[in-house]
Length: 399
Image (cartoon, rainbow, N blue to C red):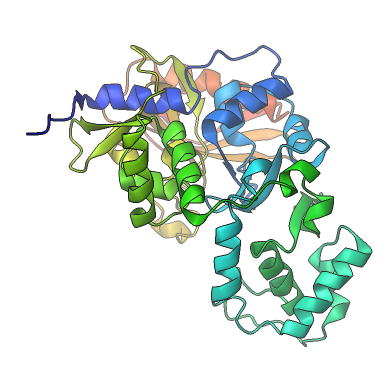
């Protein structure tokens, strides 16, 4: 008879998860590129999103873990040589370590074969023309190349995806790995170039692993970033198939990298990474972006923190429960509040549109959140904080 897997309490699992994500690391007074690298080693990837109501999504997880830092450090890591990060569809659109480029080759090949609903109608001749233009011209945005196709006015029946044919062609070439993202310009437009001018030569020279080897590497990285996780959570981190992750997990159990465990209150089996730290305490105080890895997988968030969270950006204003851009507030190892924030850059003001305490939030929640809001405003170079009186916690904030 096989032994029953060891059991972790919910609190232990929560602290393991936060430690794996870097919330046990000491903050540096002046974070350096080495600090950024250490944090990226924990998160694995940084989701990229165009919403800029507070701060771009990829900057926030670093701030949540490191505190105030010079955002130029991330630019250097992702655009200056030697490049450490490159954008790809890793979780969704995300910065990932450059060494994952060959690991993603199987994903690129699948996109090329399946074509996908967004790219099925893109003309092959246009793809060849666009690729040749970027190769000859160098770093290019879609606007730089619009003259290559006169397709008439764009369709307006699909909000958010009303791309020109050139933009679709560029995106398909990028998803297939024929192009890479060199950087984002000041308007946050994607700047494309051929991989050999974007990625380090030693990365491009790496052999392409097999599909099984790639699945194992991505699962290994997801397991390290989780500390403890179910199959569903592991699969979500790099958007993999659960069946592929299960094969990789079985291999990692055989090699001792993962140990099967039970977690109190979880109905599904879980696995603990051999390098996971099991701290007695987490002393975090952080606002988490809606795109932070801690809250990516909503079922995991509810299991770990007893915290029901939904992004309401695309919900009509009169139907939103908590607000437009709501950040969970992590204090210690618990999510104790949520706050709807906006950076009014023209007025130099951080606007607290709403603030809500979670059930059982400790007495010091308002004081700690107030301090964190002051720190956030300073990092964003906003001189003032305006608290609007919406939510049960708002009247108690002292900023």
